[in-house]
Image (cartoon, rainbow, N blue to C red):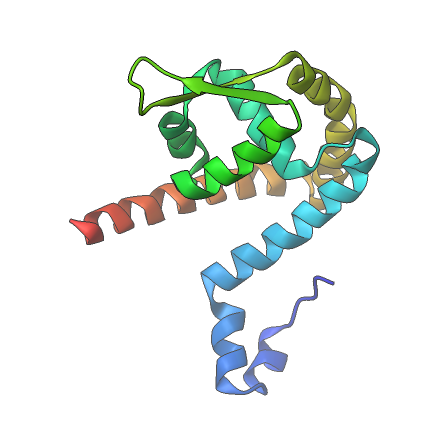
Length: 163
C-alpha cells in the first residue's frame, strides 16, 4: 500500500528512514510500483500488463526498430529490454529478426501484438482517466513534465559522470 508521511512524522524516525523518505530514487520507484499495480489491476481483463502495453506501444510507434533504438527510447538497458521482448515474442506479440548487420536484432509488432494493443487500449484509457481525474489535470501535466525533465537531467548527469 502506498502511504505518505509528513515531515513532522519523518523527523521522529531513525536516520535511515528519513534518508529513504527524502530519496528521489526511493520515491520515484515506490510511486512507479503503485501506479503499475493500479494500471495492471484495471487492465487485467485485456490480458495485457501495463509494462507490456507500453513496450508494445513503443515498438508499434517506432515501426520495425532495433533493440538498441528501443532501449534508448524506453531508457532501458539492452539486457532488461531483451528479456522483456523475449516474453512478448514467446506470446507471439512481437517478432525479433536479424537486421542488416547479423548482430543487430529488429523488433516489430505482430498481428497478435496489434490485437493486444487494440484490446488493452480502452482499459488503459480508463486507468489513465481515473489517474488524471483524481490527481487533477494541471497537476498531472506538471508531473509528466517534471518526470520527463528528471529523466533527462539524470541521464545527462550520468553520461557526463561516466566520461
